[in-house]
Every structure is written in C-alpha cells, then in structure tokens.
Image (cartoon, rainbow, N blue to C red):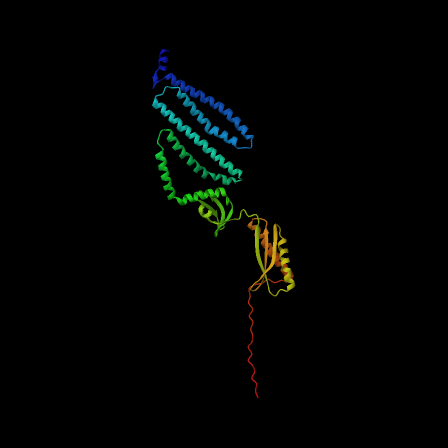
Length: 360
C-alpha cells in the first residue's frame, strides 16, 4: 500500500502521477458526459429544426455538431491540463496550440456562415439549383482569402512580425496580378456572369456568328454545345464584351416573311391578297397576327409582307406553324387563281422593216 502511495506521489516534470491520472480521468469523464448530453440535445434540436420552414436553424445545428462539439472537447483537454503545474515553456506551447485550434475553428465557422449566406441569397433571388452548385468556385476563393487572413492573424498572435510578410505579399500580389491579367479578367467576368445572369445553364444563345446551348460556366471559360454537336469554348471576358442573343428567355417569336405574286394579277384579286394572307395566319393556333400589306413592287413580283407572332420560344413549333401557313397560302391562292411570281425575263423582239423605194 505504501509502495502504491509512493508511486502515485512520484513527480515527473513538476507534477505527481496522481495529478496526471486525475487529469486523464477528468478528461474521459467530461468527454463522455459531453457526448451523452450532446447526443440528446442535438437530436432534439434536429427535430425542432425540421418543423420550421427556415434553413437557418438547420445551419446552426450543423455548425454545433461540426465545429462546436470538437471545440468543446479541445477546451476540456485544455482546462484539464491547466490544472497541472507546467513550466513556462510547456505553458507557452499549450497556449499556442490552443490559439491555433481556436483560429482553425473560427475560420471554419466563418467560412460556413459566408457559404450559407451566399446560397441563401441566391435562392431568394430564384437562382436555379444547378447555378447554386456552381458557387463552389466562389467559395474556394472566399476560403483562400479567409485562410490567408487567418494565417496572418495567427502569426501576429504568436508574436511574429507580420509587417514584412504583408509587404511581401502585397508586392508579390501586384506582380502576380500583372503577370496574370487575362486570368484575373476572366475571373472577374465570371462574377459578372454569375450575379448579372445574362444566361443560365441550358440557355440557347448566339454570340457573334456562333450559337449553342450553355453547358458549363467556369471560372475562366464558358462552354456551349453547338447545333453541329461540337463544343464551343469562350473566355468569360469574350462573352461579357459581346452582344449575346438569349433565345431561352424569348417569350414570343416575331416572324416576318414575304410572298410575291405575278404582275398579271387582276386588281380585284390583288385587293383580296392581304385578307387571304391574314386568314392563313389566323387559322393556326398559338399565334398573334400583326399585319399583311402590299409592301413594294419587285423586279418581277408584287411583294406582300406578313408579320405575326408565335406565342412560344420553341423553334420546332415555330417551324411547324410556318409550314402550315405556307401550305394554307398555297391552297388559298390556288382556289382564287392567284399565281406566285418567280424570276423570269421577257424578251421583246421588234422587227426592223426596211422602207420601200418609190419608182417612177
């Protein structure tokens, strides 16, 4: 018994073995108690959060489980070790380790809060989920900035002179910015595309003489799938500097086309052509007639111009309607005996008769 007591009273690094065992026991007891209480509390919080419409409480519960609990475990260890008599060097090491851990969890919480705020803002602005998933690129940049600031803050708290480091980073940043102007320009243009939303994934757009469906919007490039099947790759700066025709957002399609009839058409039938053209358009569904006029005298035809609107952005539907209108015009003109004009030439030959000579 005395040997056991002597063993427990044996000192190492300024503390008895009894003190070390008490620290270990306290760590185990408090960690187990915390785990039991946390399981009960978190389970109830999750049930309560499921009954609400907001996602803020879900985010808070997630942060408590992901960052709050691990930090509490670390604090239990820190407080338990604090009961020991530590040398100045050992106390400094423990304090620095605690500072690093606290900074780590603080940045994780702040990063999660910014990511949640960004996604929540985008959902309130009715961004599609596919677009919200693309915030990973923005979140990576945000995290890079946060961790850079966190490292500088941590080094400052650990007693290092960060003024020289900040100056060096500033000079290095300017040099990198000058060397990568194109990349940074495309990156800033990505933010413009993301928040200004000139187009979305799945939109059919025309850029200059190129057209296709948007497949991917990246940090540097945007990719389209053309009608021919090949992939078109544009830098983000090229897109923001170009005039973009977005056909996905077209609510209705304005259609203008012309019909030519022969000059030999009688005046009475010519007067009826506009009404026949209007009739051909109005016989179709999902259209809005605008006008039909005798527009001009062509080289070989009397030109009529027809304007109407297809109440849909679907290109195939537009072509089906235009085909039906063309067939209907053909049928009506055939019934009325009105002939379509086509390019032709009329050559008129004038005979040159020689004058007769009078004779005595």
